[in-house]
Image (cartoon, rainbow, N blue to C red; front, top):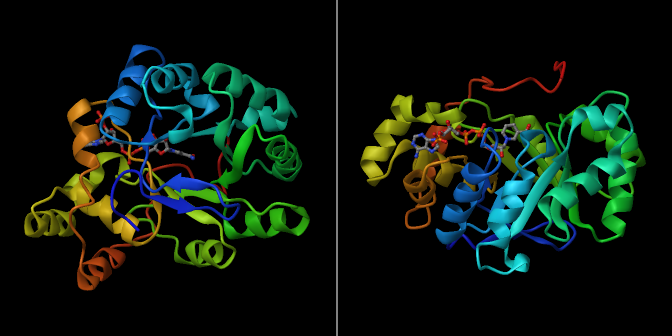
Length: 276
Ligand code: NDP
């Protein structure tokens, strides 16, 4: 049930993950990320998405610790960086993230990108990390169908989540169907197309109709599609406003209208062709 920011999805291992969280890509460590985390938690967000490569795990950890909300009520995701997969430092990289966060455990640990020749070995280590309880759930990010098929051939644990680029202009229908069939929860990164949804005429029109803004329309559409969202902002008012999506519902016709906007257009790198 989607009632408020505490509403959660039960993942394939029984762990509950909030449908709505704060993304902190490109948010500076220290006071910027601490403030964003604090404002989000004050606004009732209960999930934060960071990554080792964002360089701000320390600040996210302080923000969560200083929030006055108990650790168990906040869901923290972080991710294994590509260089650590290539150098086989998976266990060490996880421990480094855990130390920087200083929160005792990670709620969700993701393989950030499917680094060819390495992601299957990395997954085996994530499975052992999961077994020790230091990560409550493990998953992947930017995995296409062929990566998942390859991973599942030898995996003992099915990824709980696949975090992928997903927004009105990039809907990846085959990948969505595959993940749903395998009980892998989808999570959208760049759900706002990095802010560009504000310029999409159809979303502007819907925003007028519902008395909302195009960002709220987009996030509501994603939630009704049963996709977890992690919009990023560093601004208090935007963090508050972005979450005002639980007091209205898009009609089936309006959902279909947004479904129809797909043009397979990325705002970020292509998982089949990245060089970092
Ligand atoms: P988003 O689609 O969330 O868009 C963020 C941009 O929108 C920022 O420039 C922000 O600016 C702006 N914005 C937010 N709210 C508003 C508003 N109400 N009005 C106007 N502008 C607004 O982009 P991200 O790429 O950050 O994606 C979200 C999260 O997904 C990331 O932060 C990260 O956690 C994750 N991610 C994961 C990736 C992966 O490979 N797994 C890749 C990329 C992202 P401002 O901050 O100034 O408000």
